[in-house]
Length: 322
Ligand code: 13P
Ligand code: SF4
Image 1: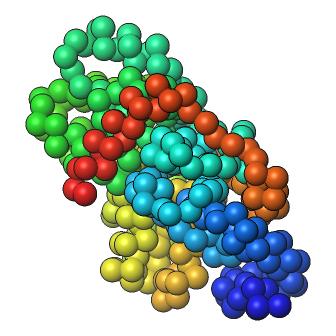
Image 2: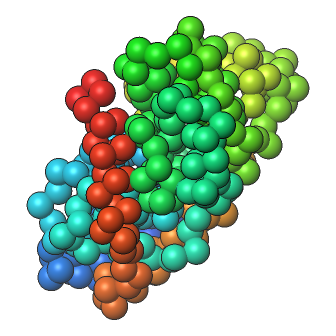
């Protein structure tokens, strides 16, 4: 079977043959369904390798996935990621069908703020623009002036040319932006349940135990973690850094699957692997992705009026450094 052979080739360096043999029929089915439905699978960098290397058509961080979603010619987009990513794809493609394999794939940041909270912030700080991390619901995006992701937050805030912004909902990403700009940042107390668990102490231990190790951290981590890092960036920023710097030894201070996915290509680098899993990302599996395509579920819809307002915040972001 041609597709199964491809799966062996792609996953051969990552998974044992017996495991690939079990996965191959599911991968075959997904490939067949993709052709039948004219569907594309967009996968976030935190997906497990069987999805990331096995069936994804396009991969990336939140910004890349939003840009790719805006460009695709497919009729159906399957988001192998969390709910806000599927909503962003739908906001940018109102005429397409967007599916998510498990509707429960949420995000602690998105769940920590509502549209009513944003309206209250606006009342409290009249005239101050609201910059909203994409890890939020469509309703929250609709109340915002502009969106950002972890890879463009600093540029987005600078692009506004204002002395003060309201930055929601990630307090740590907001603090990181404040440390990189002259802009005063009014924060919301949201955080990522995965990245807030890392500590500066833990990173200092890695340095003691691993001579010459490079520490790369996601900006959703607390400030004492980012202070210890050699590089701070989005998940795709981390991949670019590894390709450019080719460090001998590295630790990625982010979700577990990142190291599994990038280690396949970064052969010269040894990965120390602390593991903080995102339970939401891990709800997406090869099996429920297959079921999503087979049964055309779960369809992600956004109220058209909310989508139109959210789209202007997302498109304004995409226009920065387009
Ligand atoms: P990236 O945009 O860096 O991929 O981050 C998304 C995310 O959810 C990180 O936890
Ligand atoms: Fe949300 Fe954190 Fe999971 Fe990313 S890793 S989806 S920010 S909970």
